[in-house]
Length: 239
Image 1 (cartoon, rainbow, N blue to C red):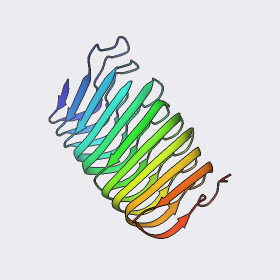
Image 2 (cartoon, rainbow, N blue to C red):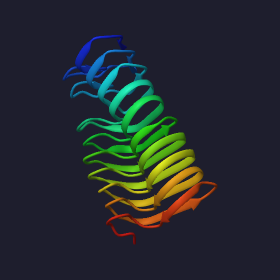
Image 3 (cartoon, rainbow, N blue to C red):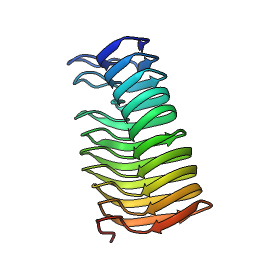
């Protein structure tokens, strides 16, 4: 277990350095301090289950990174929070929960890596941008995003710049959101599902921002929405 209460640190690793794998679960707790990168797992090594808790302090990037990754933000400041790995490695399931804190961007996946089973993102607080998938590359079979009473600029069910997500699921339960995209920003998606239960939303796109999808499903519940588009925004074909 790693607990950070103060100090200025470049890299924090919950796991091993270069070789070996811890037998049990890994827990990294950040209460204060200034950190550039926090890795729930090790440095070029694997881990079974990682738990990263951001309670305070300032962190540039957090990577959950393990077979099962759990990242919880209840305070502090983080520029980019990833449920998955940085580059390479195997992540099966990621669980990201944002209850509080100042979080700019959330990825259910990793930076340049795939997730083999699913990503699960729950947002209960103000966040700048949320991606169910990964950033630059990586394939994911299922992404799940649940937003409860949060203020968010943009929500993407899929990836950011590259890779592909097969199925995205977005559930909106009371929130203020500028834009919701069932797909990715520039990354393709096969099937998107957007469920608008409650909230105030400006624009909803079944597809992506600059990317397409095969099938899009937008279910209108009790939310107040200005514009709903079954397809994508600036580019991308919905078949």
